[in-house]
Image (cartoon, one colour):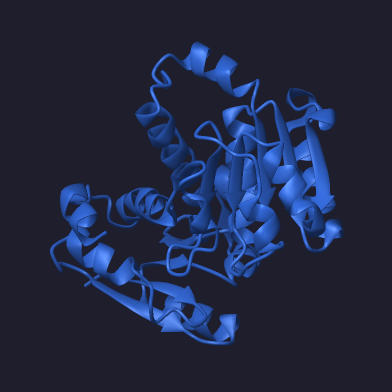
Length: 278
């Protein structure tokens, strides 16, 4: 019997087991592999599981320990999926990229932006500025999604500026001539309020609050400002939802889950039942 699960730290409140159970009516086991030592959790996966999701803080380490990686995992520089492959050993993959892109496209569609016309949508995004807050595993995938979707300008923000600079260099090297380095910039976290006010899209991936809340409350935002937050359990920027178009991390959770569950089982998950859980 195939077994699946989620590797992470302090993940007892995760919604993934309930989503997986709903997706396949309890047909497969889906367990939490929770702990402080990723190498031990990785060996447990290799011994007992067919595939696992990976969450913070292990997405980058998961990529390093895998035997092979998909293009999405390579682009993101992180993995939220580990899958046993007969011909490739443990393969690292990343469904967060698609989870972010699908969440944004759904929000734009609700806002009456034509996402079906690829040329028109690409032109629309080429005039938009995206701010990615946090350059950890989730932030890397969010940034990769923004670059791949074609946002005109992208700012990578992190507490450690060196990490943001390294991510920029990774994208420049990966995309080569297809990416103008001037379209990517980096900024320290203490510029959060000013950068948010100057952005059309903010993807907040930090697990904790950053910036002065009173400064953020005073921001001149409107419904054309889209904020997608990764943290769905204890969201920080939700207090701005009346001043912007706020996209809950539940959308990200759901969209990446549909992609990863399908890859795990080669079966179509029951999306209606998954939505009921959310």
